[in-house]
Image (cartoon, rainbow, N blue to C red):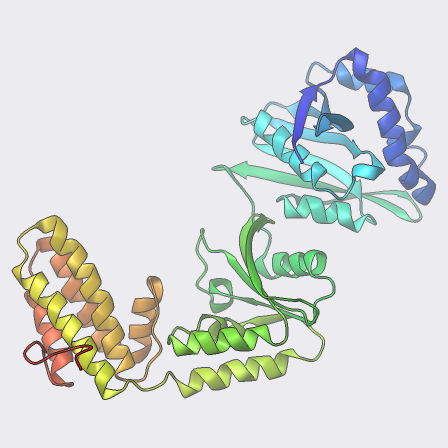
Length: 396
C-alpha cells in the first residue's frame, strides 16, 4: 500500500474533522474521556491546528484515498510533538500509522526529539510507538478512574533512536507478532554479553501450526531483528543440516538462548541442541583428509609463488579458510564462517589461534609470508604433510 503525506489547508478541515470523529469515537465511548478526546473537539480546533505557524496538519493518503491525518508542531527549536494522529477504523492495523510517523520524521531531519502521548490502556498504540523507538518518559496523567495518559519521547542522535532493552524488545516483538507460538527464545551476542552498537537480536520461534520454516529481517524498537521461525519438526531438519556441514548455527542459538515463551517444549528442544553440540561433528574420513591436504598444498604453492600483491591477498584469504577448516575438522571441532572462524579456533586452542592471527596479520601488514608458510606446514605435518605427487580424484 502506497502511503504519502500532504500538507492540509482550510479546504481540508471538514474532511479531517469527520475522520477525526470517526477514528476517536470508539475510544470516547470506551473511556468516557470527554475533556481530552479529539472526538469531542470542534472543527474550529482542527482549523487552528491547520494554521499553526509552528506546525500543521498533514493528510495521510493511502492508495490515493484520504484515510487519516497527523498533526505536528514544534514545542521548541528542533523539538517536535505529534498530536493528534488518527486513521479511519477500516484502515487501522494495516501499517499505515507506522508509515505516516516514519514519513513525518523524515520531513523534519533537523529534529533532535519527538514526543507524543497516548492512552496507557491501549496496548497496541503503546506497542506501535515503542516499536518505532519511542521511550516512556515516566510522566502520566490520570484522565479518569479507568484512563491514564502516558507520554513518550524519541531522542534522535547520529541518525539512530535509542534502543529498547534487548530482552524487553524481544519479548514485545514475540508477543505482538507470534502471539500463538508455542515457544520462543532470544539468542546471539546480546545473550553472550558480546553485543556491539551494530549487533542485532536473534529470535527463534517455535509454532506447531506453521507449515514450513522461514527467516525474516525487520527493524523494530531500535533493533535489527533476525527471526527464525520453525514448526516442531522443521527445526530438526535444520539441526541435522547444520551438523552435517559442521556449522551448528541453529543448535548454538537454541542451546544458549534465553526463553521468551514456553508452552512446555523448550527444555526438550534445548537439550537436543546441547546433546548435538557436545557430540561434535562427524569425523573426517582418511580420503577427505587426503583431498583437503591436496587443496591446501595447491593454495600454499600459489601463495608462495605469487608476486602480484593484489592476487596474493586473496590467495591468503582462501588459504586461511582452508587451513582453519582443516585444523578444526581433523580434531572433530565445529567450524564457522566470518567472525566465527576465529571464535571456533579460539574455542579449540588459544595458542594456535594466536599464532594463526599473528601469521596472517604479519603478512597483511608487511607482505612477509614466512610465518604463514611455517604454520601451514606444521598443521599439515601431523596428517602427512603437503600432498601433490600421486594425488588423483575421480580416476577409475
